[in-house]
Image (tube, rainbow, N blue to C red):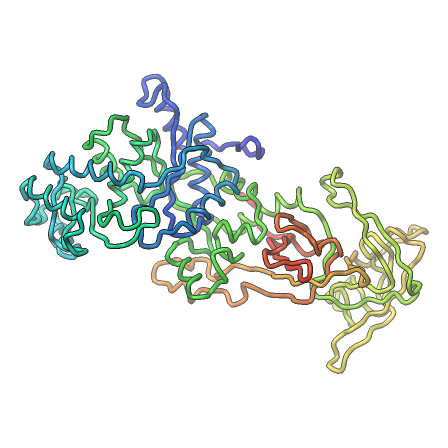
Length: 561
């Protein structure tokens, strides 16, 4: 897949480990490399997940292996089929596919329960009555913490209580099932961690069949082993959990190989939060319009804003895979999008803050058509007809009654300017309203300069400006987006991320004028509005009321290292 996108697969330490594992004498020699992507369906995928997606699916592609999609739905409190469907859509949009290898953690509830029973029978798990707060005190911060009073509960008694927990005989919090590992371990994850807890809550797939649910650290390694995963690739916060992962797969009788867990640093981007809890708060409390608000880092939000799969995958490839946590500039993500759209987006003309331009010496009632190229980088995209008449719309900023130094656009008695692809014009006057706002600009054109080139070859000192024919222009709404947070580190410790919100993250321009053909543009299309940036139609857009989102500005000072 990476080769199809013309992006070389970067070398990284994960692939170095895999090369060792599949080499002759390695633990997975002769086996198919098998990875998995295990999202929890309690929210929408965001740009941070893209790194994991790229690693999981990209690694399988590189080695001609397999990658499973498995929904980690063992904690039903916030899980929903809405998120299951959205996650599948987002993964397919990025260009990845899992074939017939889609699973749910809840598919394994019965097997996981039986493995827990097996651990009890082996004397490796027990039913405990300590509350989480009490157990935290018992576990302590020393090398010799206190033992739970129920650590040596007889096996038969734990088996009976665990069955009754499953039967729903006890209230939430009354009992937990704990692994019996090492209370003196320096790794707190090994100090008798909880394997099961009681929860009376409806599951999005299992309904009320279950009232005990396995903890992630117990369920996940079992699921990996049952599915034949060779390499369980996960983010760095699970590094301290790896001994528990290995303990689980070593002590249950799964008749398969033991997967290898490898950790990598999560993706951090400035001016962004990627905590699902915080993103949910933004949505539920109305700070954004929804999960797909174009200011959100969710994939559905980025897609709605105008991002392309290629730009996101290029971004993930270029940032590489590292062990150390680092923060990437949001500007680099924008750079990758701008680079892609520069090659692929069709060029069109749109006037965002319009003012009327009247060419006084152009015949009234006359109209003509110019053929304008769609993309200079893609001659095969051809040209399109653009109409021209006596009255046009131009950008308000392309005229000043009194010019500032080095201003080379329209002003009275100023230099000739080019109308993009049309004629040379010169300003001869303007009109204002009672408040002094310019309402109309008068200009004269050179009829012998069709195409923007004077017949006598004289030098044109003014700028080239874009325009839209007033006779055929379509009224449109344009939405200009900026970072949702004006603080580069809204997620930093001690900060209230809501206090870091950018009050100017959205500017709506309700009276833009666009070329006639844009009235029926599809949401999948991407355009370069000349001199403005890259835009796409929003899902709110209709032929009667087109709406365009700015995906990214035309230029930026950012230069990648």
